[in-house]
Image (cartoon, rainbow, N blue to C red):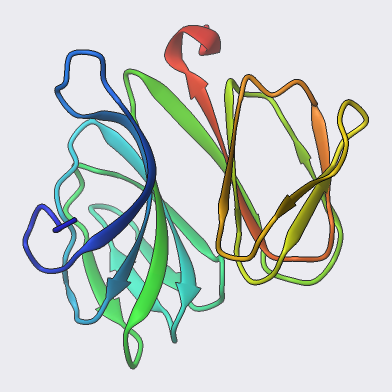
Length: 182
């Protein structure tokens, strides 16, 4: 889908629309950024951007500068903040998580290196993206789940409170509804 500012396109992986049809509550997407430029305005949303591929980029936000130089390094910023991206010697691919602040929030964890890890689950929705290889998740409550490389697993109302991951890169986004945060 085209960017709001018309300067590129995004591959939308998953989203939840608002009941009144006025936009989305949360969205996961990937984008190829091929030139320096302004980010689209997403007033009211919180954003988390992770570098997937490329030499990196610098995000100059309203009051902070984020330098992303390693795979899965992240930047968090508000969607209404004027943000300018400067590429570090070539195009990049990034992974974006956006949440409508009044509706929900996201906790984002990632691992880029080949070592085992755990995800402590505390949300109504868990989204796990296998970055660079097949990912296996295990828990005491259920059998193993296999996620092929570059695929997304969505678990609504997860039962397991801890998931153990084998040695593969992943991004885990936990979405909490505003009512659940109270």
